[in-house]
Amino acid sequence: MMQAAFVMEQHLGHRTFYQNLRRFVDQQAAAATGAGAFTARWVEVSYVQPGGVYERLRFLPASLRGTLRGRAQVRAGLRSAPTSVAFFNTQVPAVLGGGATQRQPYVISTDITPIQYDRMSQHYGHTADRAGPLKAYKHRVNRRVFGGAAAVLPWSTWVRQSLIADYDVPLGHIVVVPPGVDLELWQPTASRTAPGPSYPGNIPLRILFVGGDMNRKGGDVLLQAYRALRASTSASAFELHLVTRSPAPPGEGSVAHYDLRPNTPELIAVFRSCDVFVLPTEAEAFGIAAVEAAAAGLPAIVTDVGGLTDVVVDGETGFLIRPGDVQTLVARLRILAADPGLRVRLGRAARARAESRFDARKNAARIVAILRAAAA
Image (cartoon, rainbow, N blue to C red; front, side):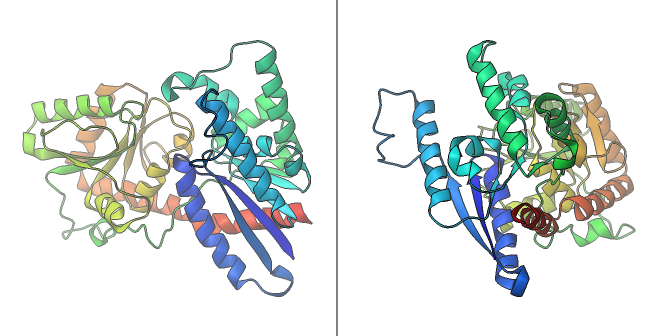
């Protein structure tokens, strides 16, 4: 029987990916019988243990303390029970596992490669290593870990290209498997799926932005566009909904939503109440919120960066714009505000794309099948 260990980092969008994947993999494990039976063990890598020995070494840099804790969590998790195959949701815990990683076949999933992350460093508050022996050593280690995987599962074609060009991962070892959402939870409203006289053609047009860090996610660009729209038309024609951790500007017809957790009814209700999703981010590895918007049947306007180009098809499920392009964002929002039928058509196509590519249940089954092949 396959004994799979899922080693999962717990920060940023990876936690949402972990929660969705765990729910559906556990369901499959519970239902599997006979030759198809398998066990799934979950190793959470948080990089912190309150009161732990590494955390008390205050003379060490915080980043080093976190690395030491993460290494201990990965290695203890892999050694805690027999494992016939391991799954890592980024290459970082696979590297930290060292020899424990190499003791069984392993599969790596990732939303971004280290080289791509370095290229976006200024937007993520990340300091890229300078050229030199340390940077070269890290690249060799990452290349070896990627190359040693039975399969590498990039979230997007953008990451796939980097794996081939920057890390020489064999093409036959790469399978694009994006994160998905629970399509039974994330559903469009009835009016959005049945256009016609019953469709309200909402006024005001409700614009949705989702991003914990408004600065990196392009919140300033959206606010400029929003103010331009309200200045050039009736101020009551547009309403902005912000799901964020950042302080939101007061008034101006905007509504801030704080402390909304992934997959909760409250968060889903906000998506379903809006008409268009906008993410004019400066840098983005993937953008799970854009997938959630597609599942909710919302047309989207996003920047053509990172994995977002796999989520939104320009002119088919929404619009792609350049980072910082306020003028084009205003023009696209005006088009959608003036044409409720277009919003419906784009939203329907977005939902169909979510069903074909971003179904968490189906993508979890794909991952289990790839793990079975690796274990065999």
